[in-house]
Image 1 (cartoon, one colour):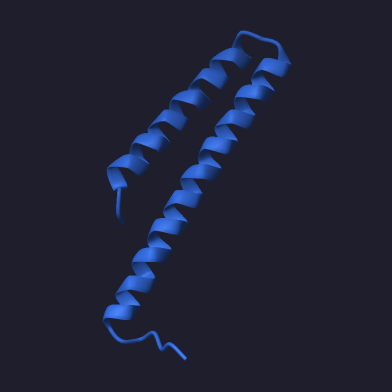
Image 2 (cartoon, helix red, strand yellow):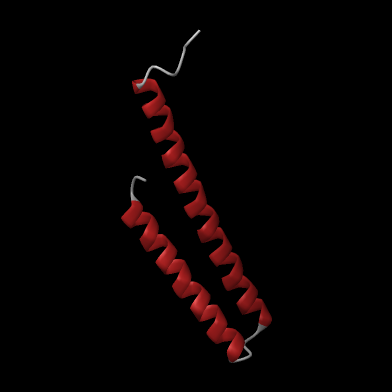
Length: 73
């Protein structure tokens, strides 16, 4: 998988966000603040998923093209 270090760093940042959310919940912080952070965490994960899918899709198509498995009409 391309950019695996970059992707791992994104996931580690998200892990830190989730730990912070757990801390906030443990301290009974305002639910709006917690929800805001959960939403940000979800968005970050969605973007990471998009990055993984798009980079692997491109790689997959390139490999198929090199192997002659793609036919253009």
